[in-house]
Image (cartoon, rainbow, N blue to C red; front, side, top):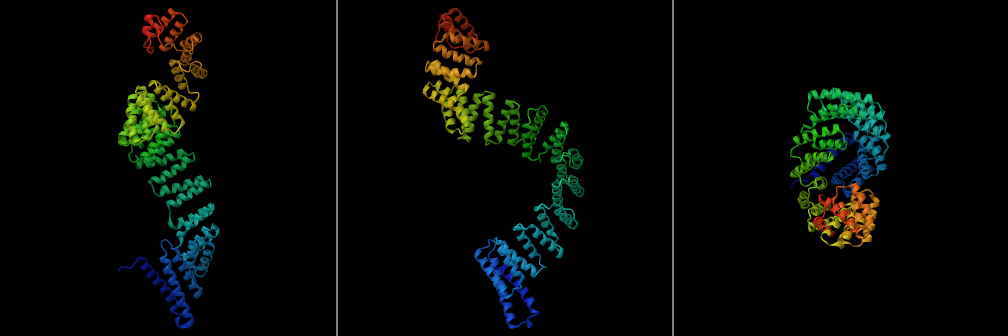
Length: 582
């Protein structure tokens, strides 16, 4: 049966400890009395048993075994109160439990009994550090390094303690001592630079960076770190020679190119900035995420002619370098969308979806462009249906589908999608727009009750919404229903937009339905002044003139409206019969 690995460790540890104890006592064995020998044996027994239980408690430091170990180490001290290692083990256990004061007391006792053991020093310093007694901890490290050979490596721990206290001068002194022993170390150099910068000793921080660059010529991180110090302290031009020297060895290094681009941009050399940026972007090894972040940063700087020119080049390079990365096409689409090149933006969004259709924001941007900018309801319907297969619970996708179907006069499909949009909407804005379109759709389906409910819901969210006030009042007038309420709505609309020709026409049409022909005439004449190209307004003007008995003038206006695009289907019959048909 194989031996357990922990059991083997216990045997080995016990062997070492017993050897230590017996070798120590062997020379004096003959001189010891029987009683003294018994105490030695007892101390040894309890100590080795304590070590056994201590090891068995690992790696989770089982509390039951640890309690036994602690008790046994204490029993060992009763027989041998000069056993420094027993105090050390007790201190280790107590410190591990967070009993720092008692742990420190035992650690100090161990160190007092054996001032040549480095582990006793480091445990004592660790406990002092955990107690936030950094001054004492530093003194313990100083004593150990001064008295024990081979402990110079703890200079770095000592420096960290000084720095934690904010004692930067002492920290620098310790780092300099370490540098004399171990030579130039990049981590130490960087630590010293941070200290010098905190102390506003820029020249010394730069000198440390130059020391590192000269010791390790051509090492990109060291050159870049030095350049960053120059840039961060408004000494951009001082960084240029170091970066250019690096590029002589590594001409396509993307980090150096980007840093140079940043410097040239800050110093007004736009062409050199662009050249270096392009070289960096052409390098496939440069992180795609970094490229995307840089382009996104520049997109936020638009409008700017030079930036726009640069972004055209960079986004093209990005796609050339990463032709199968969806995000390359997405950022190109974002850029073109920002400069209102809607067709190009749409094409790039569609291309990105060929590589990754899981990006919801791309679908949303695509639909927004197709619906609002390109007014391409056919593709909005097609793409919104594709998006809904992937994101069936996204209200905005239902909204675009419903709105586009409404434009396409697919009113049943529009009503279903818009109801889904309203149900899933997680913000008032989307709920408002869903109700706006539902009001129109249900009016077309002649479900006037639902139409009015939708318009009222939209007005509750936005009482001054022009679109709803206009359509709601106009449709009520067409149906000759709730004309007083329609008048109230259109009056509010006109108060908000007193010079809008279309809204003047809407209010005039409500007045017309109420028999207020003279008032309607004034409003329509004003509307025609504002927009003499609207067939609807001109035809309505003819209708009002007919009601006022001016038949010849009415026919004249009808004939004028006939030559316009948006006159009604009854216009020819009105002209032919010289009669008003509604």
